[in-house]
Image (tube, rainbow, N blue to C red; front, top):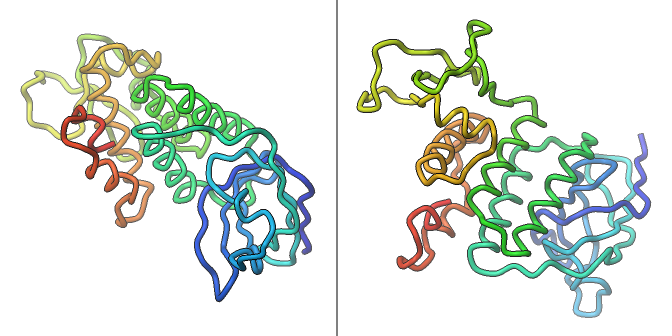
Amino acid sequence: MPLQIDMQAGWLLHSRPYRDTSMLLDFFTEESGRVSAVAKGIRNPKAKNKALLQPFVPLYISLSGRSELQNLRQVEVRSPALFLKGESLFSALYVNELMVRLVAGHEKDRELFGAYSSVLQELSAGADIEPLLRSFELRLLENLGYGLQLSHEADSDNPVVAEGWYYLQSDGGFVRQLQVTKDSSIDNLYSGTELQNIARADFSKANTRQVAKRLLRFVLQQHLSERPLGSRELFKALPKQLPPDLQAR
């Protein structure tokens, strides 16, 4: 069935060379979700709009075609490109890689589109990176149907309590463990206090940030292939004087 997209708001997530002069493009659009397209001849030196096809540029795009791989017909700038550098740039690349690897094609999700646009804009504005990424990861999992139940136990209606310790099951639910202390060596064990903080998106404490990163990295990995995230390799290459939490996002 033919598909046509006319001047939809969107972002370029990823691009790669295709044949001699073309490029394969992954877009995330407000009305059609993630879509893939080919920009024919765009790598020709005389091609128009080549400079527009960069990540973090708000775009209007028009696509058409009869298959999953669309043809790029038109592209225009929606607003000025976002200015990103250093840790903010690497964080935005990480967000883009999560979107490419996890979001299915052609599934409309205005809420996720808004969350994605917002996280890029806040990174560009210099917002605190750790809380921003953790909040986006939680939103992404929720929108994909993999949301974490952080306020109640998985096997009952009992609320998560600050003094409790909880084991994360493979289905994303937490089960309270008795006679467990913070020194226990059980994997995927989390304190009730930290789960409550994460549920409130309160990442003001360093320990909560560390726990949230460990939890969300584990959960996201369950939905990613075994291939490692390239953006994390970039973080590992950052200068050693940066804090450890920024060296390996």
